[in-house]
Length: 102
Image (cartoon, rainbow, N blue to C red; front, side, top):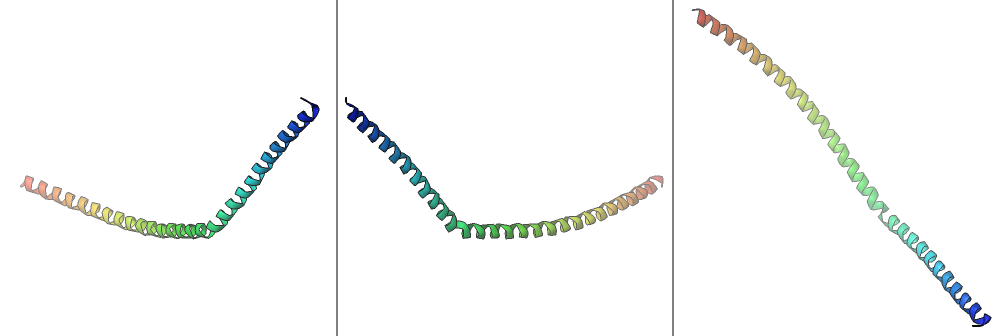
């Protein structure tokens, strides 16, 4: 092989490598631009979903507050019923002792 053939081969291989590198680089730039367009297209949808989720969370917080109030009220009722039950049990015990004494 002559020097000219070697120079031609090296030149061809170098050109192919450079073309490949630029091809990959251009494809990455194209993909990046495409991804940015996709994000831009869906940004409004994402904000709407975020707003909807935030509103649902706020509604659930209100429900939790209402349920906590109901639980507190029910605890008060239960405590009152327990006191009444203790009083009635005490009265029954007194009545039973009087019956046994007679």
